[in-house]
Image (cartoon, rainbow, N blue to C red; front, side, top):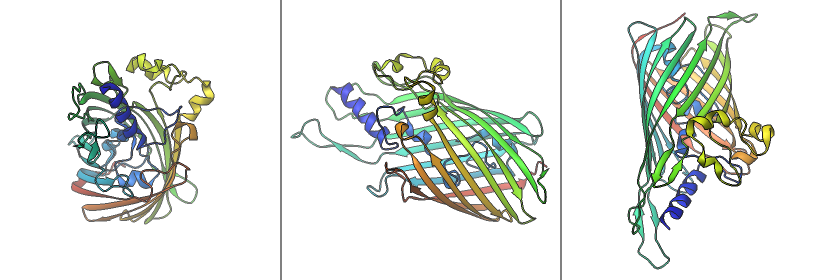
Length: 371
């Protein structure tokens, strides 16, 4: 009974993030796929090839080697399912420092997801119990420029998922603990001529959360959300004060596609990274459905004020997340403020539909211009 209840619990929590159906891919710690900062959220949940900022740790920590400030600390809080409850929150605290050699940087972040208070009972007539499930991660990264235009980074991440219900009798459920590794790369060109204006190319890739399955109970394991992201972008410097940044990003979970016989759980976490491109029962057509896409545009005035817009698309059979996002940013001396707002365009309502998100960034030290 306990294992069955725990499976249902995990599926319900995963379903609170995505519109699930028979072909949807579910993993442990699904909150890791949610944009944890307002700037990325305003650009359609993307960040692998956007301009570096303090929140790059989630998307592509290689970007820290090109960060303009010597050091920064940032905080973002995202209300979740805010139209229904007030105590489900995703928090993100991150900081980085570029080292004195000018070619490397270190960073660390802490992401915390509180599912609020959950009331439950074993039977209809039994006593009501209250639990507060939480999940969090802590990670550190090191980024290094391999050339003037290209950097790579490696990050290590501790994962914890505490969804246990200790008030149930004879439960053997335990909090899940695990680890993951990120391998990322980022390219940023020098200024290039684009007719009547200058510009700059950007490109990036990230393979995140490479690691073993999350174990909750004896014989109960779930894949963590190993993910491949890649994308590119182009900046247009209209004049000395006005700039437009465009970016396009694709993403795919590197975990097994759902199988009718449930055999995907028998695969190893590392082996599934390679088989995840060919294991869908619907063949390449279904594999293509598992790729999400996002498009973002950012207008920046004098590196002080920014307006953002983005669109995110996921196939109806794989979660049906589709939304338009809007955002803005403002910087005054060393303090930056970002905000974003999401409009769901899918028949499956997004848990973040109508949510206003805010982020704060505090920069320290000298600016470190690369070109």
